[in-house]
Length: 67
Image 1 (tube, rainbow, N blue to C red):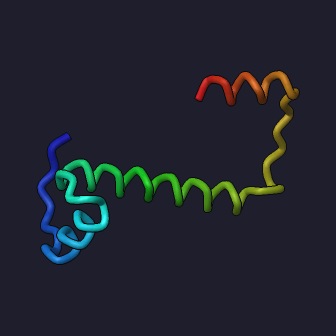
Image 2 (image 1 turned 30 degrees about the vertical axis):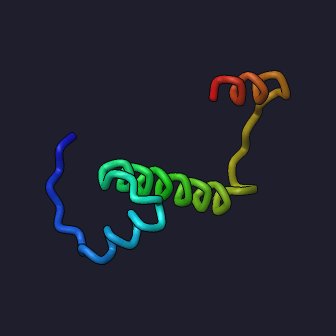
């Protein structure tokens, strides 16, 4: 998907420097993936103990193997 956004030059420069001067597109994709991962972990922690999962050990291992 193409999207046009205005990003602060200094922020992009800082991120590229920290990321090893990789292309801007790659750095933005990595940042978005990291954001989703972190927020997903936060959501899972918030749900810890609130979800009733009725899985066997075999089903859990099969789910892990799919990743």
